[in-house]
Structure formats: structure tokens, C-alpha cells
Image (spheres, rainbow, N blue to C red):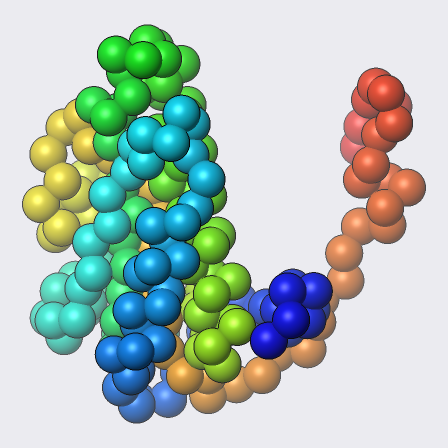
Length: 177
């Protein structure tokens, strides 16, 4: 799929077919994640690939009972790893860059899934401690995002977006609403 078409087709899908994802497609998504840009190319994040049904159920519960997650055959948990860039970037690397790196990687996975005819939904609402425990992320590692990936069982219509003149500020911010 052409890049700008991927952007047009991307949706947050919350209904999934109970159909396995081909290993080749999953591998393409994982390779796309590994190509994501990161601060200093340090890739200050880890990705936990979850296929175990019980662990996926636990992630759904830890995500404030977003039960649609349970229908996905694969769930990726993106975990910020401040240890990978703190010596290079200090406090800013520990608190900001690692989280940015993890979320950029999640975005790349989200778009890669779309390009492959799959669906996903970025999950940011969850109990950090519960998710960390489920995936074995001990401090200072911090869960940043959860991404269930599946074949779509729904095809949501595009949602309205802000007009560019409201979103883009040339040179400096105008009045923000």
C-alpha cells in the first residue's frame, strides 16, 4: 500500500476477527518497528510480543477492561527503557526520549499493520504497574503503549480532523484553544 494511502486507511479498530496473523506479516511489522527512528539511534525501548490468551486477557483487564483487546491474536506492549540512553542524554533521555522512542516505534507498528491489511488500536489507558507486572518490566522500565493487532471485523468511517489552519502555526503559536 502506498504511504499516503496507508495514512488515509489507518483507523483505530476495536473489533477483530478471530483469525491468526501470518508469521510473514508479523515479521514485517517487527522489522518495521526495528527501523523506527530514535534519539541517537539508541532504541531506548523494548517490545513484548504477547500471544498467550491468558496474558492477553490480563492486559485487557489492566487496560481498564477494554475487552476488545482479548480478540486480538497478537498484542505488542511497548516499554520505554531509560537505561539505553541515560548515559548519552541524561535526565532528558531518561524521562522524555525513551518514551518518545517507544511511541514512535508503536506508531510505525500501527502504520505497518494497516499497510498489511491488518488493524490495530493504540492503547494508552492502562494501569502501568499491572501491565509492567504482566510483561515482566521491572523499574525503571515503563510501559508506554499497548497495540493489539488483528484482522478487522469492522471498518470504521474516517473521523473528522482539525482544519490545518487551526493545527499548523507558522513561525509561532497563535491563540490556542
